[in-house]
Amino acid sequence: MRHCGRRSVLTKATSLFEDVRAAVDTSGFAFVHAKEMAALLAIGEDGLIGFAVSWDDLGEDRHMADGGRYRRRRHATFDVSAEAVTRRPHQPHYQGTDFNPLNGGIERWFEPVRDDVAAHPAMQAVLATCYDLFDALTPVADQPDSWFVEVHQFRIEASTDGAGQPTPEGAHRDGVDWVLVMLLARDNIASGVTTISDLDRKPLGSFTLTEPLDSAIVNDARVFHGVTAVEPLDPAQTAHRDVLVVTFRRN
Image 1 (cartoon, rainbow, N blue to C red):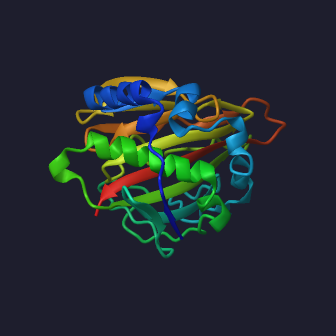
Image 2: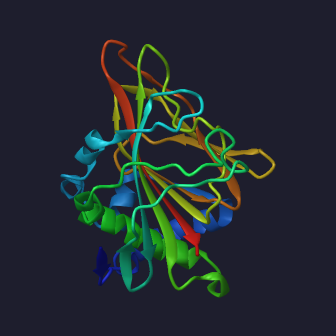
């Protein structure tokens, strides 16, 4: 899959782009509200039609060392440059135990992101916007010709049998350069507070992703991030939290 002719957020949301860039550059992270994220992506609610619903079609994560069965996901990898977004052949996700002491140290195979989801205008807008932002935040001498990008669709389920753990490994770094966490849906969910701390574990901030497109943007080299457990508001009903996680790493 190869998509060329990326549009640039710089031509339509320059001031907002620079505000987000400045926040990340200064603090190592930014909380971007849904309206601002929609402006950066140049999509509205209609732009998510057929995209957010794909979270109903995720496979169970069977690599949970804590024995949990509360996480569903799909995974894909891309090469992203100024000229193109090119999907790579399906491959495993790997993190060393230094970054993920719970589930790291092994190749983890997940069901692939569906082709129609990878090609959806919303996904392409996310990848293009991340490129514009993350490449601009990277010193020119360190900017790669092409970024290695991983995309994860996550659904965290919660029930009376147990809370769902968005980050079961705790506050962590991912071992990449940049991270986007974007909310797609919260259904009957309580809590799920995102926490940010510096490399000495000193708290820097916290916020909760509550509206579709609310996003956290993280400089992975500078801060740890985590999310508190989620529980159902109404124990008699199903409950889940859906997010898209996108990581950029220099090849």
